[in-house]
Length: 131
Length: 131
DNA sequence: TAACTGTACTAAATATAATAATACAGTTAA
DNA sequence: TTAACTGTATTATTATATTTAGTACAGTTA
Image (cartoon, rainbow over all chains, first blue to last red):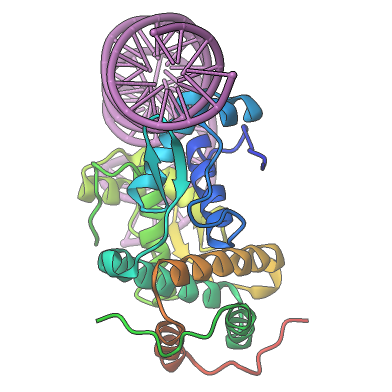
């Protein structure tokens, strides 16, 4: 499914969270699609099931997946209405990140290109609203 | 100077690195300005000097400050030419971050506003080049 | 010289991450 | 109903990372 860097200073469960997020965001894992069970994935990645569980719990907390005892864990649909706080934080973090990027040498053009690149692949929701 | 969250899961030295970076990026700490000594800052923040040292060493590695034995630690000027790898990584991370932001509910308009807001405050370097 | 600076090092304490083993409850299909 | 799956919880143990503590040394400055 993907690979982990066991020697990274970044904890395994965090790597898992990040990678699974990416798969969900990029629609590789579709809405309501079932994730591998904690035991299966643990075996595939040669790590402990508890570590998978920790990652799944975090993803559930952040609203990316939902789990049903006895059935499995599934990709949930993101509901923007629930996430005012998350959105606020994401904005703040993005500002910092962009400022840092400019500082280390990215040009405004670089930024515009990145934005174009991403928006090009997105359904144009310029008119989208959050109340 | 700033505050730390000693109860955060994020290590203190990482918090220090992030906060000092922000101060440098936002020009609160000017070029060649002297940072507080490791002992002074440690006392101010009620933490161990070694922790400050670790943060300073990291900032030096990343090119944000330079240290001179016997004199002190100072804000360095960022030289984009040295940072091709950093720039590449920053771009990648920015892409992921933006994709995630859109996923959790930010609109393209939100992004454009953020960009405008930051570019507004920046010296317009749209024409800047890296060879 | 005295009082600063950064830097290095070892040791100990603390916190976090990861593993291991087990157990229990809900689901599903044979 | 049973067997084999699911998620979830718990406890204990090990490993790793972080932080503190104490000390030392070399360069700078007034």
